[in-house]
Image (cartoon, rainbow, N blue to C red; front, side, top):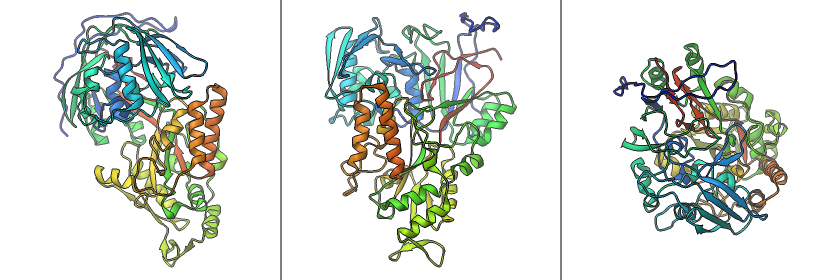
Length: 543
């Protein structure tokens, strides 16, 4: 990859005074203008909002769409945004929102009750004809009702206490009716997405780069933010660069302003040159491996327990990562809603692991690999590119499992073969799992058969699963989604975490942040509650 062209000059057009946070801090005056060069590790795949969880997708959607509500990343409280106010009935089955007047999509159409209702009918029910899937953050949705041009009600079949927080996430970004009318397959192009956000898509070279420009009439950001009105930046230029060293080198050489996916081993050289590191918490299901109990090799609880206790997470994080990656203490992160400390259930104990495998009938063969009835205990999983250093993580797990006589192959197939294999428990008895969301429903998002279905249950995502289903787990996940008492809901989240570890369905490894780096002159960078960047208040200082 050659030098990245910086063809857009930095220009000072307008100064806007920021409020001082403390008397001892001198106010900085944001500079309006300039284009931020943002290097992304991977291209976005789709920009249909409910599929925006993939960080490259969310990193675009967060700039071009708004949400009904805003989740304060510091307090995690839900605050007004496009919705000025709302009411919720006692049963948490009806949510009524009063909308902010004067909001429009970038095509000039209104963000009114009809548009918002159509968005949520699509997100809550899906659209089979257009192949638009249901959002994983919306549970028990029934229908919308347009009360008046600026008032919309959403009605649910059963209590849905997580819905309010769900209106604040990437997956609930509001898009125009023209966008909703497109087939899912068309929404991989950013030019197809018409939102109401502070930036709009100007041009795109699919898979290579994307140009956003400021929307000059934007005036409806969350009212609790210090910055109001249009964005400071003229625009944002996304350039896709897969090589970590090229992204780092471009940033340090002044050829880029901000980059995502800074690996732990690169943090020191970035900080040595006084470039700030941003490690934004994802507050969800930890970076883990999840088993597919349909596969006979891992159907026995004792085998899964053995593999869990044969993973030394401390060794993994100290070998590969920095202090920004704490070892997992439960299924979800310590910063996640409903976290329960289950460290004792994750103890590294290779001798216990060997005993469990002995009890399950898996005995070491001449080559050291355990076997039973002529079959070796040989497992495989695909590398997950979005997860930091995932190949190295899985290779360390492979070394650790080899010490107890288990063979584990780390696969790096094509994108197509990886997707197909990950839906076939016979080929991939385990999979890499992780998802961010600052709500207890994140556990359901990862493990429920109608959501991400990490365990692959009968009736879920894979037609190849014919036997495995866990109604106890599904009941616990459904209970989290329907419990209206906040403290009880957190307790149910704890019960689900405990059950997942007692069944050894998942091996949490570390808490995954999103790690970015920026040039010292980049100011005003913010992150939503699970680590996606917002460039709304970002600006470029003189340099």
